[in-house]
Length: 119
Image (cartoon, rainbow, N blue to C red; front, side, top):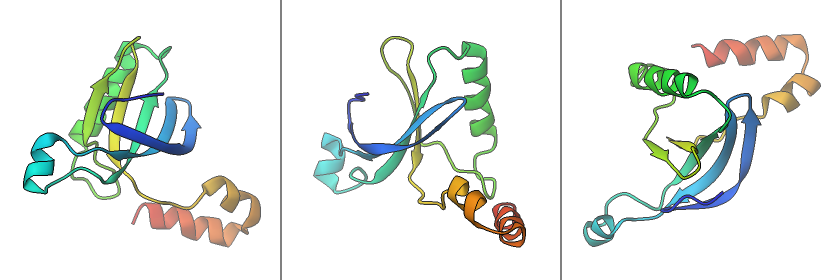
């Protein structure tokens, strides 16, 4: 996928609502002039085009309402691309691969990992 203003680095993962890519946001002309913003890594979540507009609206609204809550990532931007494609932009946060952890760790480690997500 191609979103103007971003360079996609690689696919990070996917789930029921879409696919997430690690990307870099380009600097705008204003940011170039004043040295602010742009150039940072971000996560682009491409919402599955077959998902209903109601579900997309619910997800975006939930993210807006939860802004500032601990342990909830903040949505930076929302883009409507061509062909009904919606893209949510988040700061990039490197995290452990839970699938790998679930396959290799014992139950005590998994419990500790899950507790850390909610503390």
